[in-house]
Image 1: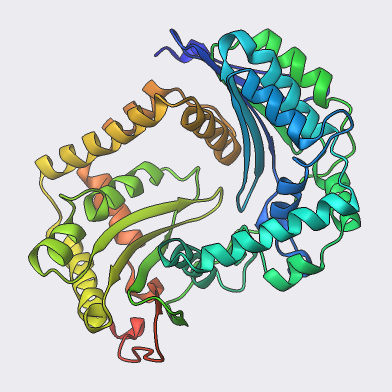
Image 2: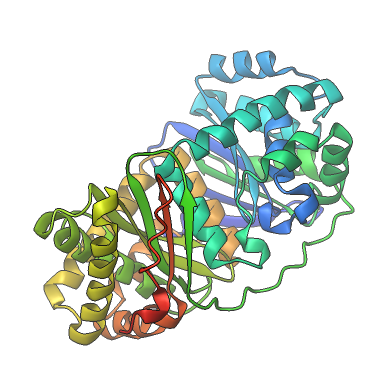
Length: 424
């Protein structure tokens, strides 16, 4: 891929428009992102961004939800949205010959939502069911608990879904007020991938969104680097979920890609250190992997495990010993090459999906302020050296900042798991 296939422009009102034309693509995807999310809420409205994201799909000034569904599916496409800690985004993907339908509906949803009291109450019931469902899916819920733990005391600790009691009390007036404050320039940006035309995309974005003036950027503060901590959360699942991790780098940090390679070496795939030691050699867990959760000014690198209660302490101790061994012994050239290829393979496969490619383009621009081609991303991975990874490991694998969360059945709180006792 050539970098020239990514073009950046703006509407006459200053909304950034980033397009990535993909040769041979027969689909077209369009996304409008709003630079506001759960970290930008106050405690009194925790979950409002997510509820608003749901409710705008109920009706616009020209369509109800059934009409949207008929039109987008009749165009061979889909519409969807997501809420994160730092943005809310709405997107539509269709076949190339009906791209105008995706543009029209996505623009309408963002620019002209009705947000009636009736629609708000209906959608609250759906959102409350979603929040309840997440808590009944411990493999998902442990991620929310860990982010809440590691960023405790800072707005990044607020998960995207919000607090159930607060969500239940929100009104259509709350949603309208938030919409009028946040869904405005300069918080809007537009992305398009696939069989798309940059000039046509910019023209659509201007026509749909340039009237949404008068907003202000959210004021955000970078989180302090957290100290170590431990949290036990009770649920009724027979299996225990474990998260053990550390704060890492913001999206513009020079070693962000090195941190991704560190993550791959530790816990990506079945050849990774953690999988081999904890699952294959000791059979302590059913699942084990690590991941990086990236924000603009911070991130976390954490390992996640699922096991029976009798194996919790040994699983945690084995993970800790692997962190120590990594710092003490490093790794071989072949191991790094394998991790790079594993990561590049995941990136390339994702790029073959219009939805994933749209997400990658938008999140890269939102988090770093610039767009990045697939070739550039792959070259950035290839450029990481062993020295880069070890420098990142020295920064990140700090026992004084290690946080552990356990989600499990019963009242056993594993008091013997004390992060302050670990040293590596």
